[in-house]
Amino acid sequence: MKGKILVVEDNLLNMRLIELLLRDGGYTLLKATDGEEALDVAVSEQPDLILMDVQLPKLSGLEATRQLKRMPAFSCIPIIAVTAYAMKGDKEKFIAAGFDGCLSKPVNSRELHEVIAEKLGQ
Image (cartoon, rainbow, N blue to C red; front, side, top):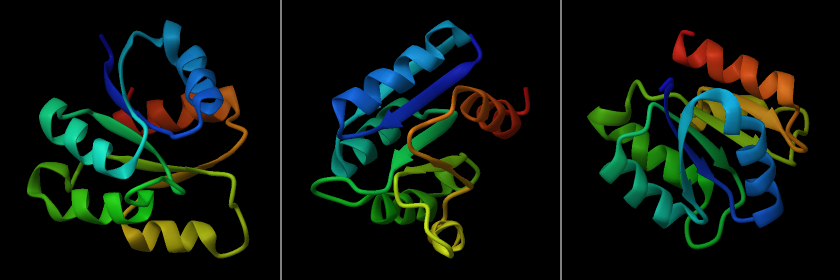
């Protein structure tokens, strides 16, 4: 196995797309549909990388990332923002919140695989 990836996405179609794009990559996929669940799954499963939607119910992806990055166990775990909001200055805002990169929706297969390989050192 190449590693565990936590996909945090509240839109079932977007979740399914990411699953399909990663299915044959040899990754173990974990799922969460809101920010609170993302924290719970991350702490219990210790993923190697997190793909985090920014707009989430209960707790935003920004706040969930801030909370995770404050935990020593997650200070070096890559968290990638996945967002439909890719306006000028947003990437900088996401990096300042603790994200390690950013992908725009709809997710591009090639870009997704490149970012994951780069962040996991593969």
